[in-house]
Image 1 (cartoon, helix red, strand yellow):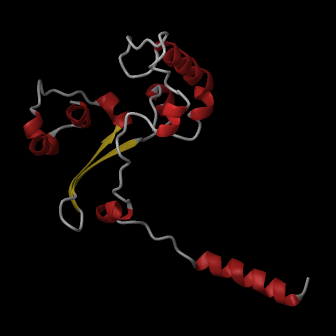
Image 2 (cartoon, one colour; image 1 turned 90 degrees about the vertical axis):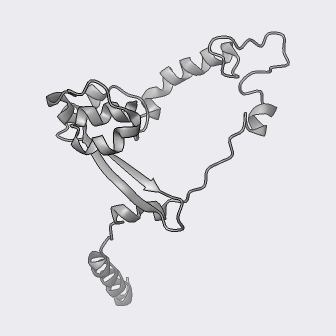
Image 3 (tube, one colour; image 1 turned 30 degrees about the vertical axis):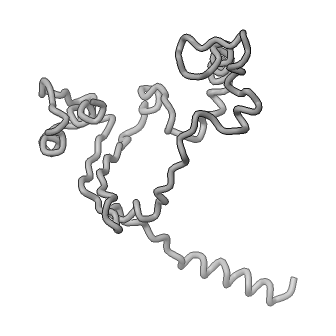
Length: 170
């Protein structure tokens, strides 16, 4: 290997160590996320062409329980496939339903960030920033009997984590 390549390699490694990663400020992160949502459609044309959810023109098509535009036999198959492959599908994500007790075991904190944004102006504004620490829920119980949804933003400042979570679920 020539000396040029060795010097180039060393210079690249040294320069990389000086590059700093800049964190996105919390009140600006929504500016980095495109607010484009796909159109809500009954099903895509490919799903319809392949009868992915069942052929609703067939006499054998039955959509009763649950009423969700998926043939009940297909829904049973999809559910079995989900159970069969769940261990592969969930490995790298926490964005699906799972047993939180198993997930939190040995975890000192697991924070849920609740940010309320006003996206009507041309530049989005962070209106309210809350967080809930899931392991702390074991030590706090919500003493408030009922929280009105209209009052949630004013009351949330004075509520413990358990009450905040109940308001969020409500």
